[in-house]
Length: 184
Image (tube, rainbow, N blue to C red):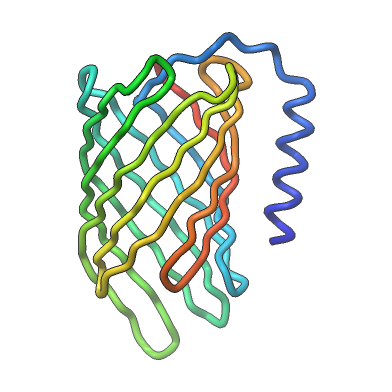
């Protein structure tokens, strides 16, 4: 949690020097990098992105690597597709499905499995430069789990945003801090 606090302070420092951004338009073509703070002392990073094929369809992919402590490491790779339902000018509803490949390495052996992930959620602007997201995730890799994600991003420019998220439910809570670059 200490790493997350330091990263948040650095982002706030950057925000003080950021230019005044125009109101962003929603795009599902972006790349992002996130630092993960996992319950029980674990941490890691996630590199992901999305590509919008047309006004409603998009593809998603991500890679995550994490250290859970006591010589337990893991990684996951996800790839999938989604659909956007424009709700209002500043709000979208989205759904997506993903194939997930997860690997956990422990001193007692390794675990590899492939499963699915489903997501449904909303994304909207509550202020000209502040986006919020709420997503419900269902994941079935080895066993099923459902969790809620709440996130917010501040747009420094129309193409650059940074923010925080929390994912909770099931066995573990994950806090993240990261940045997105939109290729509009």
